[in-house]
Image (cartoon, rainbow, N blue to C red; front, side):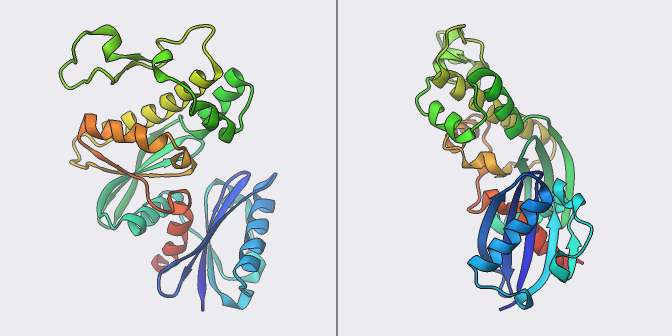
Length: 274
């Protein structure tokens, strides 16, 4: 079986997948290391070992991501090319959802927005809020940047202790805004707020800011389908927060099966576009 490898190279984390000859995703894998080159070669070696693959089984290697710029030679002598990251985002999301028109929301350190309309895939903007924001503010406010710890703290938090809700400022729902809609992020926070409440407030702030930016980016396009990819999709709070925004704005947020690996999948698929 010949496999095309897609690798999304971050600064310290590398994601790798294989696409088989019949178009199936083969064993996505993530590896963390101190630098992108170590991360890439560690991920590649582990991937081959875990899947009992030899170098002769690899059809092609496709690289993408910010760390790919540090790679200046073929991987283990194999045919190696580069996929443009935003195109990889779009190709991966299209593969995962079968949607033809959508905005892909790539939630990494910051967030990029990629509009897909048939074969037209273009980067339309983004915001500097993402996983890096959550980690940085958690470091300052919670004395940890361990996202797993932040996630667990947030599970015990109460958002009413952090955010001002419509119900806090009006006895009745406002036009188009139910009483549980957010009026002000962190507007209710007290100086003695618990770590659990702060953790949940940070997650709400990052995810709602991303969601609102995505919806605003779609105005005038007629697009109502938004595909969420990247590590933040793994937060257990992610789906409920976006489900609330769906009901409020009459849109649809999707989290694909391999949301964490969509860009790597798209990089492998870009081989057919060479």
